[in-house]
Image 1 (cartoon, rainbow, N blue to C red):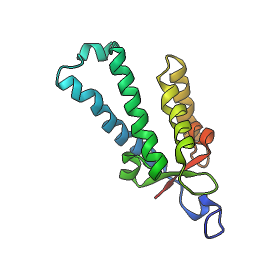
Image 2: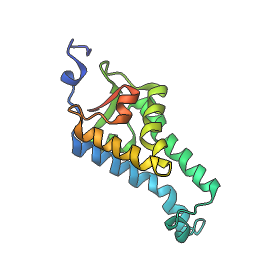
Image 3: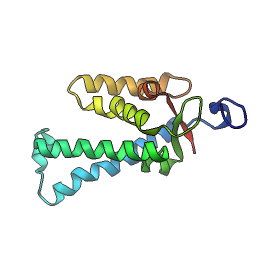
Image 4: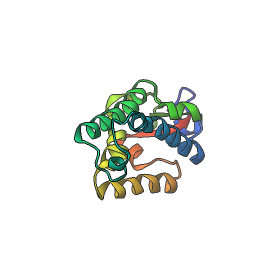
Length: 153
């Protein structure tokens, strides 16, 4: 419940589908710079990226960066740079507070962590997107697993 005594989704507006998509696109562009910069400096070869032959050390570093980029600001502020840019934030469903560390890790693991696995990752990604499109409150599988909802800030 919110301070006004209304359920959180009535006290604040849910994020729209365009906002959710926009936030993902902004975050995707920002996190892709971690690959683009090493490509520009010749540290990673384009052919290796294109053929998914990134050296294991770089692959691990990219995964850790993606996790930190998403988990830390979500836990501390309820939003990544992409969510800030489009005016949304992640809150605890039914309470409205910050998601904290556990919920932020669960959201990331379901939406992005599992998304890195061969075959299963594609299925999980499709289920996450499908659940956002089909759920009346626009909660993805990762939101349901973590007990969160994305609202307008």
